Length: 75
Image (tube, one colour):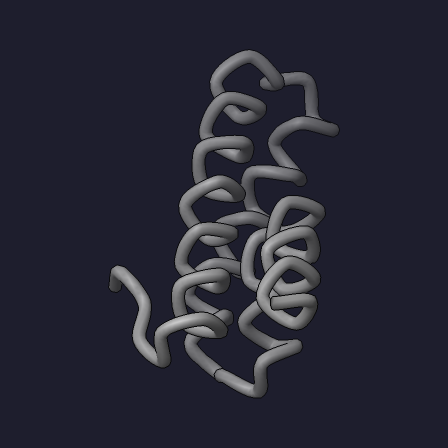
């Protein structure tokens, strides 16, 4: 249970980190768009970028938690 929660928390920080913690390269599919949205935030286009960044983080956290608990995610 602790491993699943830690993976979810890491994915809230930056989408995909929880997957990397679990040893899955599919976290790259979450990390690259997340880094792009984070760069949009710092260029001044923060309204839509922040909303999409948070939505991607929640989705990634749920997926990482599901993988750690059940063995398969939602993607």
